[in-house]
Image (cartoon, rainbow, N blue to C red; front, side, top):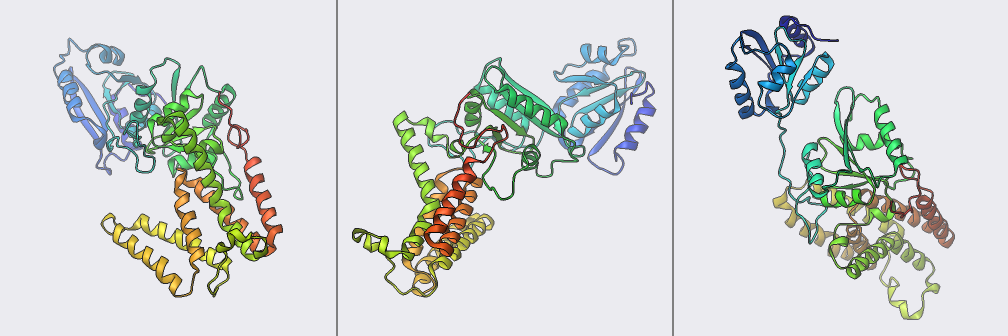
Length: 449
């Protein structure tokens, strides 16, 4: 629906659609510009006061003789600001007002002047807490999408770097940026993602990035391995762009979605690239081996305890010598649950209390639980290694996927001995090999574009 030349009709329509009278932050500012009735609509918390003061000062100085005949001419000759556009459709105007753009209606003009002088509340671009690097930059993504695109554009000064903006969600109208290198990207994957983004008819993205991930790829509940890699580091995102990957940025989310990805991409981190080649290769190999140990260490230990005759004499010391009051399988399950409980408690513990509570939890869980007879010291040792080793790879979702595989292997080993262990290994291998990413490739695909 197009706007009217009569400003009162436009004001009435905007007031009918937007709760201007009820919402304190939606401001209607009436004024006279060049002898004509005019009106500004804007969101109070999104506007730069200094910029708007200068723009309004210029407009107030216009005389009726200097007043242009059209909104386009006014925006080009009289308003000294960079980001200005004109709209004649109410839908576009409403969307811009709710996004924080200031919209100016002038009596007699068939278009509305949109002045994009908005600013969003944001924190500084500090290094992310979970994705740190010993070397390299110390900046990180924030919740404002324009800042995030600027951080990547600063690193890649190439005309092939393309960033397309789209909106998803009828209510939320969340901004989503599709970033890629046009000369390196997989064109088939790019077409697939573009088609999916344009065809989404969701009401809103309730959990921003996670909601978008669920819309892009309907995961199977029984396969917990993640389909996307996430990073809060602009240098990592820029490196992935130069490798031919696609980056998805969602407004209000301080991380980037990287695709396509494989399980080898999941266990990579920035430190692998900031060190010499030999050191980087060693870090990757050691991280991969430790990741495998987090899956197989405790199930193998349980298997050997069920079949002690398989243990060579030189490794006789691994046998549990003390009294076993609770079956080893249930000890391992209890410790798995306890570790998750400590992790959840750490997330909700005030920072000033985290250190003393961690010490108390370590003493209680370690020394006293063994002395009380609930757990054997060997079980505590192996589970402590697994708990610490989970943090050697940066992907949180992958850590829980590996945990579920470990629990499955433990259960099958406890029930069916070596046959269950072999069956569990086959299930794990199949879960990884037959897992498909968004692009349709195998989860083990390591090809670079």
